[in-house]
Length: 408
Image (tube, rainbow, N blue to C red; front, side, top):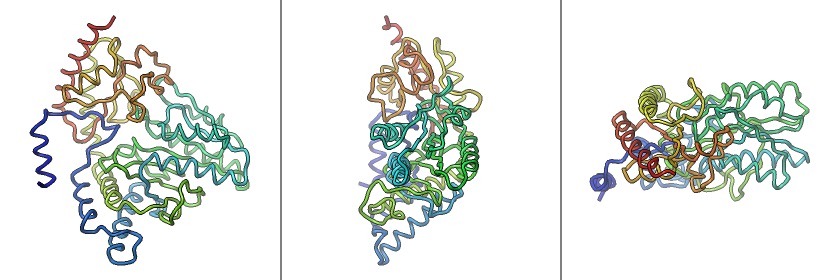
């Protein structure tokens, strides 16, 4: 039985489902899947092989690299394919510190308290191993860092600043362009003979919706994943500006400019390239559609008593994310009740959802536990609709009413 026939059979046997957890992962766009399929069987060659099978695969990789580079407005050779943003983050953060520590014993790096675990845990590792001194920037009540505080935190031995473009839990968009300008200013003041200062951005959540032209942002490195933009899982990329020196994290081959060994995942790379191309060509219309759905959701959510919205106001939040807290209604319980109704949402980051502790992101914003324990993250995509909003609000209201009646 063919894939599409199996899909129809599966869908006919289950309830209508609503997927509002697109910050965790997204459905693969049918156009992406179509682009990938030939590279599983017809063009299955190893991209490192010299024969025609290999060269066909290498040509597809080159085309995908060009598509990513076109979107970022950078050189194709500045794109390194990885297994995802977690690997990209590890490669650039560990790689920069490892390379510079060869000739410098005292290094300082900066990040924020609300980074994704794939960034935050790397900095904690550097700190634990005494490879670098780490400064963790505070955020305000909207989840935003202060560029002025960052400026005061930079030292003469600061070699790396890593700040996420947009937060994965409440969608706060950080002032990346202003940070880029600050980094450039500090570099000019230091002069050529001083330690380099690099700026890395985890752009996983922002790639789909925000301006990611690297020169406009002023970044030296940028990480992203395919599965957040309707591409396949297990593939991502690292933009690394020419001249930035990093040591590899893994060894075993000369792939990806000697920085990321391993046989290239050609189907996934093709899918990533196609997904990025679709973002480039349809971003504006997708954002308009998603904003309408988000606006309808917010208007209906406001009718529920004892709630609060978390994150920036007045356009400082991603167009697809709503983070909202409900008093006397525990988030995990709401999630499970909605799941039984065929609706998928999240209580926060999928990478830390197993924890019963209050969200560290909301805690860093100063939100009290009685609110953070009742928080939900609703994240939309181009495949959602206004019809789904009405169904969601009805089921959500029912769940909260039941939970509040049971609350002490």
